[in-house]
Length: 458
Image 1 (cartoon, helix red, strand yellow):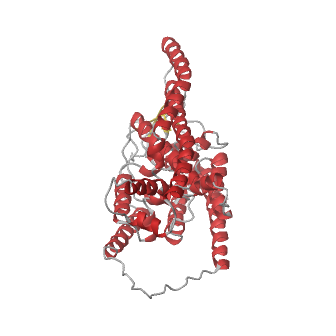
Image 2 (cartoon, rainbow, N blue to C red):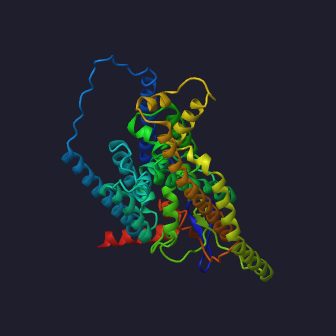
Image 3 (tube, rainbow, N blue to C red):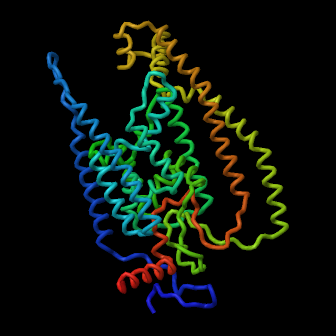
């Protein structure tokens, strides 16, 4: 009997001979590793070149004027939007109609090559969060059409079809997916704890961008250096560490860092259509337990204990009652951190440095303080600008704290609530619709074999 064979133990029950084996080497895996090796070699070569300092031009040198064709750039934007829409449509078709892991994989490779290496990781739906936040907080910035489409279209797709964007369209997820080698399971408690960082990262990115202080998502994008073959050594190192971790922990960045993934996770809970492991009723064969490298498969739950159920209701009532207290406490912590957070803004840091120099508390000048004085502005004007920014942080920082308190409170409530499950299902928030679980399901394979025989007969 082959390792994938199963034996019937009773009506409606199937038990496996052995656990689902790891897939063997294939042309797809060889292609993925070759692409990964090529990326690392190119990135290493660029890093070596950039160790040499850039030339310093002498006085009298005039930089040439860069000319960019607006028509050409506009056409590129329309092409990108069309490719994004087409890729999302194909992803939905491959996941729900074809139910094909192979088709999803090759679409992943295409997205990595086009949105990653060809388009250099830009425009990126993940980074578009900052553009939207900046447009909302600044009255002088108009959100470009392309950025709006890249931000909204994956969200709408997720609301109707789950995380199809994560499955095969996002280049950041794709580059992690192709290097996945021997995935290990992350304990649920650890995954829940580490996942809080993504919520904090999203809150900080929105706060900094809405005030105009910084675009931290783009600044600390770990993989754009590989896509553009140009980045600081520290960012290449960070990207390399995350890719190394993603060889064993499926999509490390997506699960524990990605701020856009937080929004997609929330929307997918309300999605009209989500991934089902089996095309019909689950037969509890347990072959899908090890098929998901992202911990998104939920096991059947045993029958509840009445006493435990009563205790759970008391805990749930207590958690709901404590939710406003948690939110208020974190909002207060955010207000206390308002000045520290405001130092993310260059104007605030510059004002602090100039004030220290004016009051003889430090010696010498920095390049920034010297550049400020060369502008001919007075320190009073700089201090006024800094106070305006700090007032914005006095409002935004408590809101950030309240948001984090709400996230933690809701997660505590979710841990208390126990849902009854009669079979194996996917977690709609954590499932990235990669279609790996389809391969392990014997019902899936049996139905595909029946359709193949029908086509041969026809």
